[in-house]
Amino acid sequence: MPIVSKLYCSSSQTVLGVRRRPHVVNGGGFVVTDCSTQKGGMVEALSLYKKWKGYNLDYEGLQNMVFTLKESNSCLVKNNGIRISVEPRAVSSKGWNFEIRGYFPDKCCSIVDTRGNIVAQVGVNKEVEKLMESKDVYHVVVKPGMDQAFVFGVIAILDYIYGESTNC
Image (cartoon, rainbow, N blue to C red; front, side, top):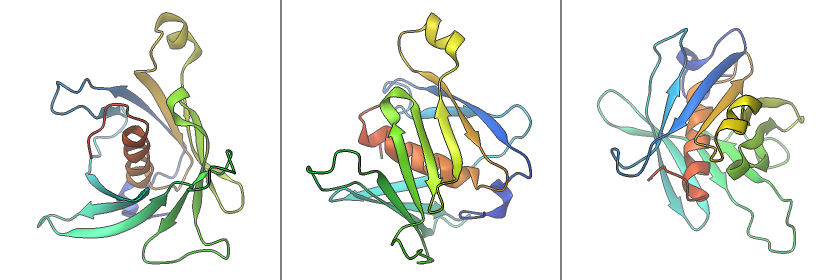
């Protein structure tokens, strides 16, 4: 499902390695590694009142809004997931297109569509977890046809929300 561009969609499942960078290295962030391709891109984010907007920058530097991510404001509902709406508004009857399930700081979460299908999953390799106490190295499994640039735009915002290494 192309959201940023069909260039970032693969016909097969893709596993990408992620390594967090310290804040002292170009402001932090993370490095994504896919040995099979040399794709790259930039997604920028802006936050207003627990509502984030993801933008795609074109070759002239113009911003095009791609998605909106909204944190739950309710302190009464603890398991209410972070919801994502794709732009232009092709919103489902639920009022959102994707939801984050799980807990990103533990690197154990998924991006799920409105039908409950996992489109991307964040995890830590068990062998790496045994060697390292921190979760600076993790992987993201992106399902076939899903836009990898969109997935990592969402992950960059989650990284920032939870005070990890990304500066938006």
